[in-house]
Length: 599
Image (cartoon, rainbow, N blue to C red; front, side):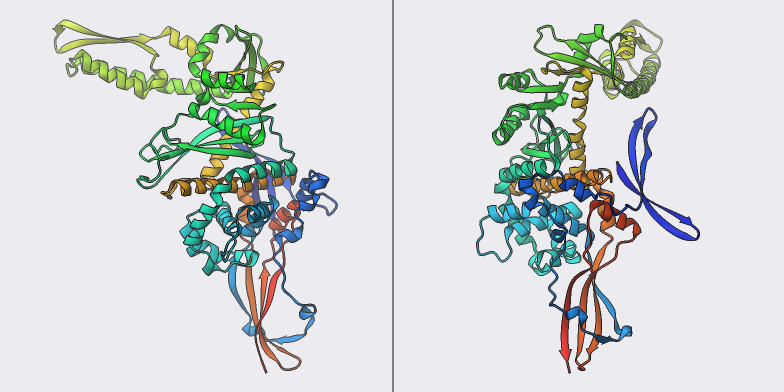
């Protein structure tokens, strides 16, 4: 669900409000519907922060960030605002406009997760001018707010944000050498950071870790990558098989909160990563009571045996061809409704050690039937052309005809068995025709498509659990897929421009931390009734700026001085609703600077 800003005119006035919108799938494609309209809240209603804070235990209440966490210090002396001065209004200026709202909430999320304290404690201090924990914060906040390169951070992004006021680091001190070294200092603490985030997520959101979702994606490089052995060519999820890549294995909870990840060589098959990731996670968090959910690309008998030998439980997908072994169970009887449009049934394994779950989806069936019809029509049109070429005498060689038929089936592989094709050499030729090409629809293919389209097969070693529950647990794997989509699209993990292996791993760690912040904000928004898509919220808060109001003034004693007030813009009515629901109050003034004084 996501937020949509709406505007309307009533009685000559423009009114802004928010609607909570949900996307859902139909047989005709994706559709959207309004779930709720969000307006002003009563002061007595609980804010999102109050709802989130209610889940913190007593021993962690002291770590609950208060509103002052998000406010920069106000270095003002007592009574300075009460001093009366005369101001020349025509000389008032607005200077030093900076992006404030998005970096302000990002800095709050960083501190809410306790990453500031963790890195200050873990990264050994030396003679550096700026702590490496602060440099890491700049890298992650930039990835969260406006993903780009370290050079972009130095030359453009940091200079136009209000982080100088929030962090106390001048723009000229944020340069690529310092940022690159910050990556080097951050990487050795990956495991400590993962353990800390697991604990903090549990405190904030009552995290459930019984169901673990594991999936693999890839991200590609720009450059030759000769200095990075992990960069290899392999199956690319980004359709960039021409570039070297690395594979990224990510483990998330059923709510999508990240628990850990590993980086693998770009040519490594998904199934070979399973045992590595399981051992790594069990080393950090233990092995008892966990159910692993993985898609069919991870499944191999060796991996399932590995899990069973360790007392592990699993729900996994299976290859499509395995569905044929259960053809007798695809009959219309004994199906249970798991949700609207989805039916499931349990099929015990012959040996009794596992349970297979058959599922069929009406939407998926309509989609697959449509695809089969499209590819069948294409294949038929290709066969007509092939036959015409043979009859005209342009195609005379059986081998060449077989090769053309093979290419045609490869291009239309979903319907490759839709026709039984015969290629026969004519002896003697009939006029110009040397080959006879005939075909007829395959009855087996049509019957199987009608029976199996929309169906898929799962397997599990869980006992005493009904089919609908097992299916719902498996479908949670979409949370891992969404994690990759957010990391790639919203946080721009691809392409990778670093060429050193450690820098590549550090870059991925920064993206992992930015995703942890993203999920924290998403969970916070859910508590506040604002959906679970932070992009709209960040876009709105990014419109809130800070700037200096500069004006010449004169005191009663005749002292002339220039006063600079560093203020934050007032949110509009719609932005105020979002802040109110999150339980946040924007600071009004960051600081006051008396630049000069003269008699």
